[in-house]
Length: 224
Image (cartoon, rainbow, N blue to C red; front, side, top):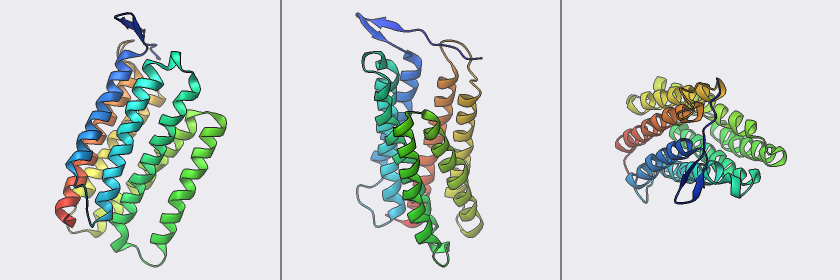
């Protein structure tokens, strides 16, 4: 059942979907914390990509919460697009982190193939989302990036690496993200004040924490 969240007014200021906006900001806060916990400079591209993943996801979810939900009524639907595109860039950066992490175990031209495919995928889905102004393309891109791409590379690293800590965190993070996507698609809400978007954001918060744990495990494994 889909619950529509009422607006609230604070000091004369109308805020739409207040809980959804707040839970978006929680995800953003976790990602911002993770960004600052990773080194500013690193010789490991995996850690660099993870740092940029957290920053872009922070921006995307903060933008989504404030502009895409709370004050969209004052701006118009097209203002959702910047948040969508930044979130797609974020998923692409996460994919590149997984490619870089897996590089020692990729034979032949697979590393180059995935690196190029990663960009083609982003351009394709971003173009479709921009042209049709349809969130479904963002969903498909995120679903593929997390549940297919990151999952597959996590399993690959789980098989090949001696230190499997990061891979286990990654797999658990993907599971949380998948549950968040499921709650969103099936509209699994609890009430109008905690609807399917809020449930989804709780799972995405868990996923963000687990991705942070994975990045810290990689930092110990790979060094700065």
